[in-house]
Structures are given as structure tokens and as C-alpha cells.
Image 1: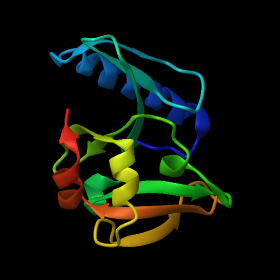
Image 2: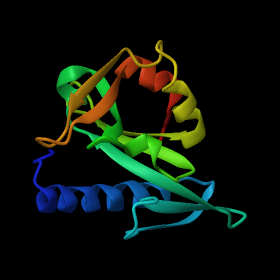
Image 3: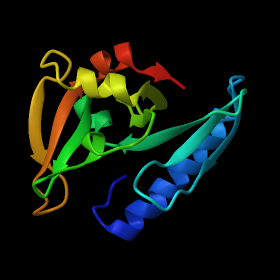
Length: 152
């Protein structure tokens, strides 16, 4: 659960990264993975059988369990952020779904950026985030999200 307290949220994020990237090792197309990057460019890298590294940005949505929506941040404190600034090849989401199930999903970042330009993919833009951050996010219904992302 997000606490809106940096150190608590960071601890949760590191645990999520470890679980997610270790899970990817069970995929027959993945040779190895690394995570724990200390830059903001990506959270981990998946290496395919040919040894090509593909970077992954990983997000977690705790509120989807109550709202049935997935949130994509694109601006914070008046500057581009989130999906707008990632340099990753893939965008992944850990979703806390209605009913309590936790699922992992992935999509090519380029495809997601194109989808977020379509007012039929997202249904509303909202403000949120930490107090005073003026974070702008686009909301996508969970069922629409699942039509475009691949389950891990």
C-alpha cells in the first residue's frame, strides 16, 4: 500500500521489483534479469535468449482494487513525469485487483504512449499524488487495460 512517505514507499517498491523480476525468470524467453537500478531511467532489464537487454519501468497500482481503474502519471509539479519521461523499452504494472488478486502486466512503452493519446483508451484525466505535487494522471478502466497489456 502506498503511504505517501518516501522511505516506506521505496521499501515496498524494492520488494515489488524483486518479486516481479524473479517471476520473469520463469519465462522461457528470458535468459536473465537485473534490477535495483539507481537511476530514474528504468527499474530492471530483461535479457532474452540472444542476450539483448530490454529495459523495464515497473509501477504498482494499489488503488485499482477499489476503483477498477489504472492510473498513468504523466506530469508532476508542472513538468513531464512518469510515462512521459521513461526511457524504458517496456512498461509493467503490478495491479491490486478488485477481489484481492495481485497480477502483473507488461506492454511496449512506445505502444502505451500511443494509446494514452487516444481519449477512448483513457476515460478521464485527474489530479492526485503527494500533497502539493499537482500530479496529472490519466485513468484507464481495468478491462480496457487488460485488452492491451500482456499478463506476465
